[in-house]
Image (tube, rainbow, N blue to C red; front, side, top):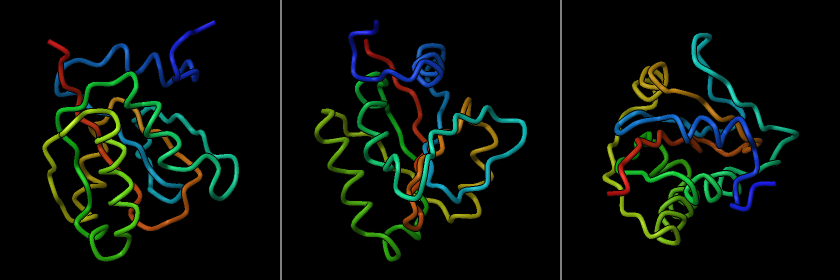
Length: 135
């Protein structure tokens, strides 16, 4: 059995195979997922699992150098934005933040290696995680 925090085999595999600057999207229950992108659907019901509850184990295995967030989160969901930033602090990471409009965010997800869907049901709870290097 795996010893590290992240137990989901599909998600762990996707993280293990991405290279520098490739990205994975972590999203809420409502973000549209493009047909041609691998979907890892963890959603069970509204709120389960939570966005932060999935982000933190991802950060335990993935070095992130840049994140992409929708500008709308600043006004529509400042509490989630705060929680995202705190999760990165706890993981000892300070990624560069790229702000885009939500419509542009959805277009960028088409280039993700995988999109991980949570049960989160709060607006704009989505982040694109661009892989960094550990050396």
